[in-house]
Image (cartoon, rainbow, N blue to C red; front, side):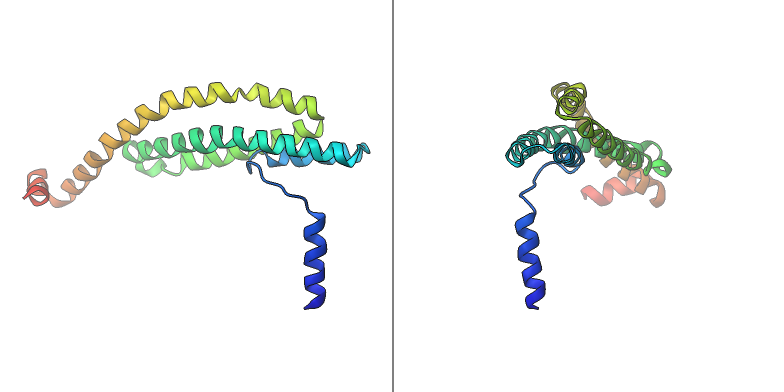
Length: 171
């Protein structure tokens, strides 16, 4: 037990604080690895790591969790209403997109800080967020209106007629 505790303490002291968006974290890791492999000063590496962690945490949360993920959920719900057998399509595409973003982040971070900045700027996070918000609210409205009718008509077809369903719900 003592050996395990000692190893945990030593390992936790060797691992610095790291908190950023999981999709963009590989870019920070590859950027730090590149700086360390080039023999950069430890303080400079730490400053670069902390600067990019905070920036990418904010950008990633705004772009991916607050915009693209809700859009993917709404698109999946709409796809369930239109083509129920293809409901798996949007989550799989969303997952593939996440792998693509992670791979691009690693590639850009491995080329250096300037390349990483240009890659992030090329993503245009502000435009993605504002464009996503323009689509998110109409999708929420459409799904909010469509889901009850979808489930009511589906249940009505199983019951036999919609009148008996409406009567059972409202009476």
